[in-house]
Every structure is written in C-alpha cells, then in structure tokens.
Image 1 (cartoon, rainbow, N blue to C red):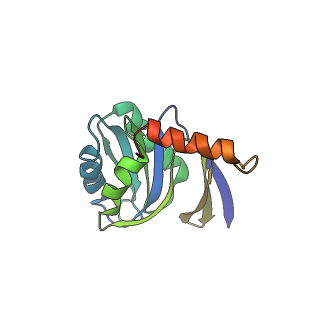
Image 2 (image 1 turned 45 degrees about the vertical axis):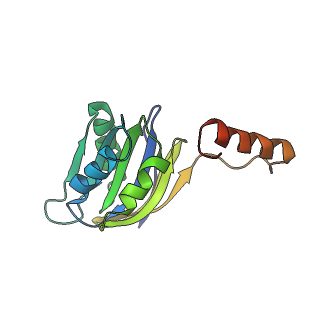
Length: 159
C-alpha cells in the first residue's frame, strides 16, 4: 500500500474533483456544465475504472481540457473526475452536476492551491481526501464579519 500526494496543476481557474461511476459521465457532465453558466469555459476528464481504463475527456477550452487530462493521469484513481472551469464558479455548476445520476461524490470545488491524497494498492488507486488551501490563521471578529457580508452583497450573492 502506498499513499501519495498529487499537486493539482492549475492557473487562474476553479477545479472540481469527485467520483462518478459510469462512462456517460463525460457527456452528461459536458451538458451540465455548458448549460450552467453563459460564457463558461471548461475541460473535464474522467478515469475509467474497468474495460479499456482510459481517461475520457471533453470540454470547450483545449487548454483546460488538456490540463484536466494531465491531472487525471497524475491522480490515476478509478472513477475519479476533474473539471477545470473559467468564467464561472463552482456555485454555478455544482447543482447541475449533482443532478446527474452517475455522480457519487465531490471532494473539492475550489480556486485554492489543491492537492489530492491518493491510496495505491496493487493495480487499484482511490482518492482518500484533498488538501484545499491553507490552515486558518485565526477566528473572524466583528470587522471580518462585516467584510464577509459586504463582499457577498457586492458580488451579488446576497441582498
């Protein structure tokens, strides 16, 4: 048994990592993403767990699609997927992805630095967790509460 940490390669995009259970994941997730947010750019990759065991992929941005494939190959966990997104946020697409029957689990949806903890045992690999961002530096006080509330209203998520 071997545990390894895979640093996700990304630039200025958000990343969603999860598990799904069926080859139609790629087509269904493509449809969910393209209809979730006008102007979204994305690339997605899905690791088949049986049969040909290929990394299946699609997207509407070749750079993001290539990065998704590269990261999926590095993770190498059966039935895992990775989606790289620009011009949209996970909050825009997660409800659409969750509506797909083959979705099993979401491990991360973030713009932060991200690493995936993978367990390898023989020919099998699985995601056992993620390292998303950094440790907290303290607890918010009244000033930070006000900043948080103002920020959410400034970007239109709260009224």
